[in-house]
Image 1 (cartoon, rainbow, N blue to C red):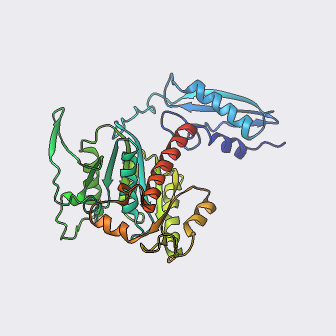
Image 2: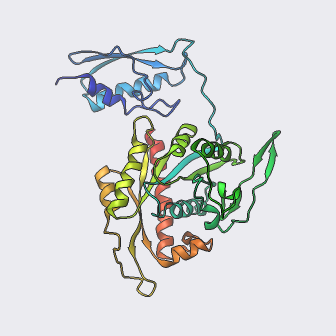
Length: 358
């Protein structure tokens, strides 16, 4: 067997440094001193601290990865190095220290029901007993206040440790904030990108979110400055991509997936949601009419090797109840309610699976 550098580096991408959650290659922790001599391999791992609490476990994991993915016969020698004192950076505290998992709900284009999915996912998680927050990050087209029927709500400030913070509105067990609470709903929001990003940052960092198990982000459609700001500001656990089955929507969904999977972003895709998968008339509940095409999102999920988390039917009650502030997940016996609760359960399973892998 011939061992070459790419085999070794590919194996090391499976090893994560617990201090930042990145793999060794992505975190640039593998020193440029890789030597291969037959079945003997040697290299150095650069740790950000000296001493580093994770050094022994990471070095052992690196050796195991090479023996697993390259060959059990490889003799591995790993040296431990540390950054020079002037290169060592103090780890910045997380922006939301009380939040365990951050889920971005995204779509490549508008009109595919992304906000509907985000709202029902958040409520579904709350119904499962989790502490949940929901942030409407669509600065230019906020819809969360209407979907919760709290358009007239006005969040107020609370003083926490001498600092004034925005108190989120709470309904259906979900804490929620939206720029829609602070602007005239009859007027267009005419802001440049920088202003929108600053407003969004305020809703994240200057709000009293408290302890949350899940923080759901209803992101704007497409890819924009707002997405990049969220990725830079927050350690996003994973993304849920929403699309309809039609090819135009799927083409845009690919762009959203590619953004999160970009090596500089590296946000895991928790899975895809096929919304408006089929039409079911109220008077014919057992019938399915594939108006936008059949299983296009399912095929895309198989192609990209990511899970299909849910197929949500197109029924009139979803639109009506969303407009009335009564999301369908609140009716657990309905087909759409069952679909949304199943989605919430699958997201939890995926997140737990990522934690085990990490």
